[in-house]
Length: 186
Image (cartoon, rainbow, N blue to C red):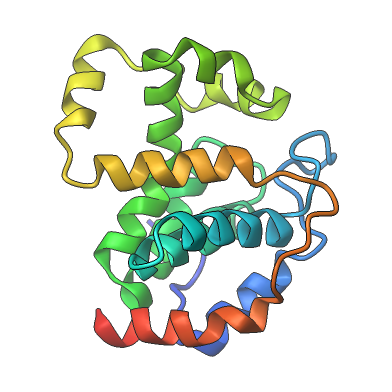
């Protein structure tokens, strides 16, 4: 199988890819999230930095979790896997897994938390079907046993919260030192 894209090899390449997320949208017709992918990813990362200040891998996963939308536009079901594949060599397995699991965590939360399911954005409700729908009881049990379960849930909750039009967050360049530390530690 021919790869759809080249993995991200350097921090400079990742910063450029993240920059390409400005004015890029999760849905080609802009009917999805109310903010562009870069703004959404920065909001998500800021929430994770606030709530999990010691977990820079989780923060960086929040920053890159939706790059799959830019790498393979229109593949809602696969955007987490594409994003994880793109950053694995640079940022390591845990960051890549968390990026992959943010879609899985949505399926879990819809199955396990009726309040969460009711609060999903219209875009998330629409894409849930393509992503496999709510988990079955067996899938719930397996996911709860995953060593990255808690971090994946935290990423998903930040993902759902990071969609505020006009919210001021730090510029993308403020993330470079953190990305460099995560890349160096892998």
